[in-house]
Image 1 (tube, one colour):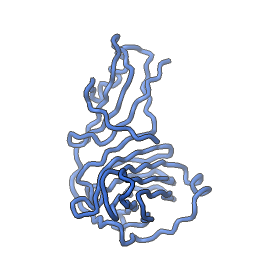
Image 2: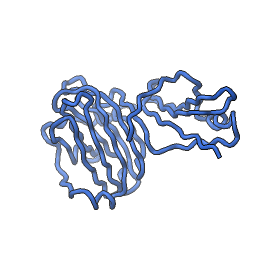
Image 3: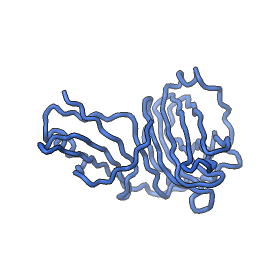
Image 4: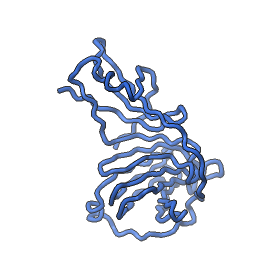
Length: 232
């Protein structure tokens, strides 16, 4: 997975309802295809279960790069990201601090038990592992916390078939949170309004040559993905 920096909305921006027109303005043979990889941008508040940023439905083949920032003090102890699945999957992840020094942890939180069921707290600036989910999940959370240090981080997640992960992964013991995991108490708050826009770059003849899908929450970008332009 690649890490892409957010591109400012400096070119032509279209609401979702106009994307078909934008794609066809230069050529009727242009088709926009949505690839699997998505960049997500953490936004505050998301340090309790009720404020968790929404990743939506995760399906086999999805590739996510979640970019955020955190510290080990009271001002930003945890970043939560909620998701659902429609069946058995495995989440292969890499969590890496930007400074290469801070000790970050990743835990899996289940709202139905109001607690963590699995934590990765191995020490060091990088955590890696595979979270095995044996059935559909209405809502689970990935929670990033800092045992020491903090700052910018990236959490990469690949969603793969459970059978494939079981063939290469050690059996995992489900355990309650360890001492290093941050508190992440349930807290109910309204979710921010989400808006989706498409940024399309046109050539001198009005034909699309590049496109970007951007999702906004309360006016700030939280997710983006580059769109492939396939010309038949």
